[in-house]
Length: 351
Ligand code: NAD
Image (cartoon, rainbow, N blue to C red; front, side, top):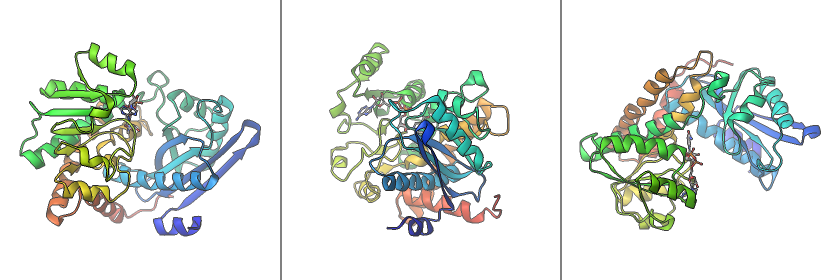
């Protein structure tokens, strides 16, 4: 499909391009929707196979941010940046500074932050040339690593799922199997342990598995996690883990985790529902991170205020599950419906 046709169909407002051969920069910023406020979303540094692939990716990701931000109750629309480069070998400070000029040129319609391939340090370089960047380290006045809030948000979403399915928010005695022992999982496990859950974790990285063991956490091999008998499966590693094939292995009642784009394809959501598994939409569950950085915008970062907002993931998840039950649709469809309602009632078009 042609790009403009795709943008019209999906409701995108803008696709901007910026090149700077002197620093090897080739980049795109997609702004999907600014009805709720300036677009907010990370910048991904990734070397796609082609320009077409990169453009489709940034457009798709920007639309997902509109829905994530709307559901999180933020006064922000959806946008995303993409730098076509190998983050390990081609990323330079000069490239980040030039990219900052690109962000600045949009005059605040798009506010950037970290995504795959980008670090808090990169944000500091970007901040030298634009004011429209968040996710800076705490020592630079930013909100620091968002993983604690993300883990807290996942825990809140799990409680809402538990209330819907088991009639109580208390997760005590439940078994939670977690794929990926990274930053978010570490934060999530603290809440689960305090609650009295049994936690089982895995990671493809042997040092992470050893670390989990040394902290007294039950560890299994990476290939056993999907079929592990548990109450809640929490994907906290990479996307695409739930396919029509892989879900046949599952032995859980709820899927609720932080990983982005967990469904390999949209129809997996319906297949999970048919199999009697409650799938909590990832873009609602993992919003704690974007909520956290949003509290850097136009104010002195206040972790407590961000935490209160992240705790509302419980209410939104409950609302989504009520819509899902009432209309006999998947929670993913219900979440889309709720986000669309929020977009429709937003009366102003800021910029
Ligand atoms: P991380 O890199 O700290 O941890 C991910 C872990 O998963 C790593 O230890 C990695 O070795 C492991 N892993 C990768 N593939 C695996 C596999 N197939 N099986 C088992 N383990 C595997 O990342 P994170 O910050 O904890 O984020 C986790 C997920 O949540 C990512 O998908 C991220 O995009 C998403 N997310 C994170 C945040 C945040 O605030 N950090 C916010 C929103 C979404």
